[in-house]
Structures are given as C-alpha cells and as structure tokens.
Length: 291
Image 1 (cartoon, rainbow, N blue to C red):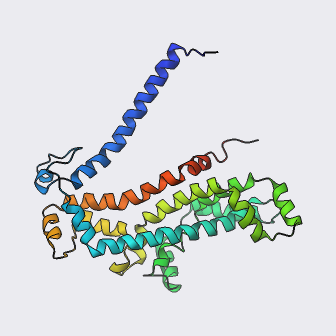
Image 2: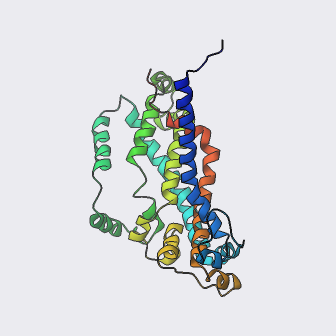
Image 3: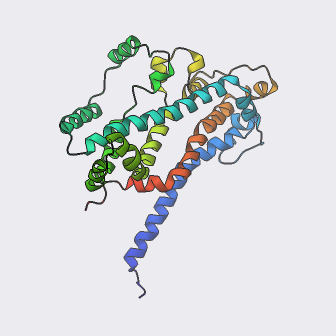
C-alpha cells in the first residue's frame, strides 16, 4: 500500500530540509574559512581576499607548525591527557555508577543527592587551588585529570543505562559465585558499550579542550596542553622562533599560523567520532523509552 503524504506534510518536510541544510552550511562555513586562510598567502590574507577558497595556495604555515617543537610538545601533552584521562574517567565513573544503579545498596539515594549538588554548586577557585597545592598536584599533569575524574552529568547517563540491565542477570551471576567486580567487568560493561562510547566521547572532548585548569595549575611551559599553546598564538601572537625558513615565511602572517594550529588542534578529535558513531547514536537514546 502506497502512502500519499498531504500537501501540508510535503511543505513541512521541504521547509525542514531547507532550514536544516542552511543551518548546517552556516555552521560549516566558518570552519571552511579557517581551512582557506591556513592555505593562503600572507598577502591574500592581509588584503581580505580569502573567503571559502585558498588564494595563492601555500603550505608554509603547516611547515612551520610541524617544525615547531613547542607545538608538537603541547600536542603530545594533550594526547596524553586525553587518552589517560578518559581511561581514568571511565573507570571511576563506572565504578560509582554501578553501585548507584543497584537498589540493594543502602544509602545510594543520599550519594546521588551529594553528586547532584556538585552540578548545582561548584567549588570556589581559591580553596580548590589551595587543596591542589596541599596534595602536591600543582604543576603536574595529574592536576588536569584527577579533580575531573567523575563528571556528575556523565555519571547520571551511565547510571541510567546500568539501571536498564535486568536485575535477574546480576542475581544469577551472584548465585554462580561472581564477585561484584567480576560482575561489573564481565557482564555490565560489555553490555554497556553504547553508554560507554557516549560518555567516552564526552570525556575525551573535555580532556582534549582542557584550558582553564591548565592556566590555573600548570606553571611549566613544557607541560602546557595544545589549547594553551593555541591561546598564545591567538592572543599574544607568540610564535616560537625555530630559525628555519618555515618560520620566516610563517611570520609574515600570524593569522595564517593561527588558522593552521586551529585545524591541527581540531581535526584529531573530530576523527574519533566516525569510529564511535554507531555506539554514540545508541547511547544518546538512553532513557528515551521506558518499558
């Protein structure tokens, strides 16, 4: 049976597709402009001739970026924080979300209230800095990972998924002699790949974009993540003099170097999404359907 759509329905779909297409273009055009400027000559950028297509194509800015040791050092710090920090985030969040999802654990309601309070009231900066200093985390990369090991929002997302796992499955595992850690590792986590992928994307993007924490707690320039290095280029125009021809060419247009570094800082985290897309879409449906 062929279903015929009404005229109003067709008009709605046409308007919806047109609006979403235009909205997507408006979001993508600034990014396209960044790409164009990173591949255009200094003269074309200064004259304002670059819009969405490179003018007087050149790769000199990327040559400078890839030859600058400080940028690569900041890039490696960011990768380290993202990978290790996300692993810590997932382990700590899953370890707390599992007991909070089981009704047999006494006091879980009070713990959920305390966690919810952290979403409403954030810790003041000065007491938080004093605490970090007293425990010896200032000027260490651990300061960028340990304090943010558990996000309240991601905790509630993961807990919501854990509550949907049948209780009978957990009870049967206990009867077979499995410990709580074994149940979490061998049963709960394998069944929670969509939720873990969703939370993992949230955590990895947050860790990749670590900026304010680095400004507060990191004093050594060799430990600066990529976002802080990018800030130096965008605000202070701090170009590291490598003494090579790439630097001499790049110094003619600081804006070209800035655009190149923006792409270097953005593309790696964007490339992660396609590999986790199918899990991410499933994870976003958590809690949307109740039986």
